Image 1 (cartoon, helix red, strand yellow):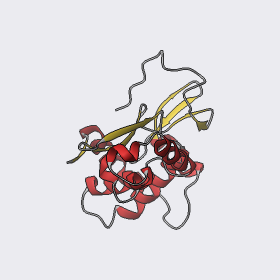
Image 2: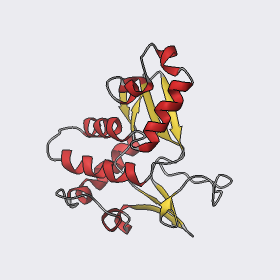
Image 3: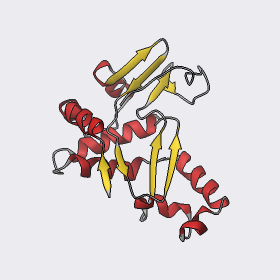
Image 4: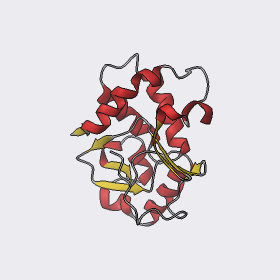
Amino acid sequence: MEWLSSSAQALFQAYIPSIKKLPINRTLTQKDLLVKRFRLYSKDDIEVFYAPMGHVRRKAKIVIISVTPGWTQMVLSYQLARSMIDHLKTQRLILSKIKKQIAFVGTMRVNLIKMLDELRLPECLGIKSAEVLFEEKTDMVHSTSAIRYPMFYRGKNYTGHAPNKWGQTLIID
């Protein structure tokens, strides 16, 4: 069973008009996305921005949690949402397709697959490689983040190291 949280659904619905205004014929830039209309939170040098995410795979066999989605996931989620909004009927389907494509995309995914293979996770799941989790067996894994939406420190991906915000409450749901 797959599910879309009510807060993710409400935010996606609220942001559809802004997403539709984004250009579709080129790669999105920081000037397109790191703007006030997409900003959810800002304090000192920390900023959190909305990105079309929030799909939950409730029957997944494993959950992989990162600190926060990064710039790469943010750009790709918006580009995918923009390309699908006018063609797909349900928000759940759009966000499901986004999750499938952005989960740990890029070099992060390559490194994660290698690490999971070395840990012999595929053997436990009865698959040949962790790579399968991000291709044809995406229903087996739920990828998520401790901070649901992209967080940036001084304009760069927040890594969880500096500043250390874990001692403070930061809930964006």
